[in-house]
Image 1: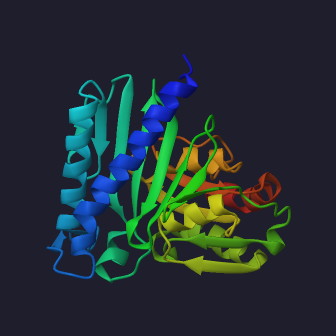
Image 2 (image 1 turned 30 degrees about the vertical axis):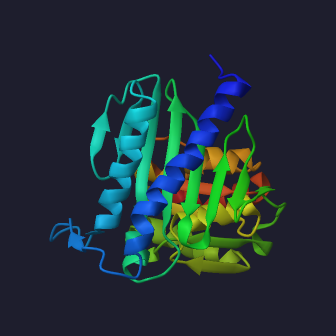
Image 3 (image 1 turned 90 degrees about the horizontal axis):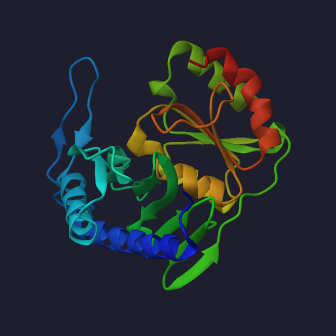
Length: 271
């Protein structure tokens, strides 16, 4: 059953509260002593986590438990709690921990809400820049920053040759995926690297036309899909099928025509 406008407005306002709570836990540790640990394995390589990641997720979970004790939570740092509930919050407290560790303000806090298994609201927060990108297909998307709210809208870009594109790091792509990325990059006007989910926010803002990534987990995408769709964009897998919250290979685009041109190449390495 679709959520009423009043219910969506209530949850949307709570989403901003969650961003403020996570920011309070993260910002004192940014460019400071953040308690760096490595949760990776010798095979997977360095996989950093900091007290900012853990403290922010604890703060978000505590606020959800206080306000909506019947809601479920899925978080990168502390796992699942009632993942089959009617409402489930999906959290990545610091997406882009490598950027965080390097002192670069390109990390974000991702908070998504699913209702009956479907993403309905999401936010991409960058508290150091005082930015919260909020959205949903029913609510539209907007940027909340410095006390003002600005509507978000993707921009038209019907030709890949005119597009600005991004990916997080070509080094994490498999051989076939790297081949696809290289071909798409050669066709595009401009490419940027290392943006993590901040690049997805720029798609919703109409600054970047196509963001491509692979190996994404549920907490990497659940918050992003509503923001992109609410801004008039589209989220798909690399084979062109609708975006799956389970993760995998993702394309976030502002213009369907541009995306379709890229998919000709991306489908060759889709799985």
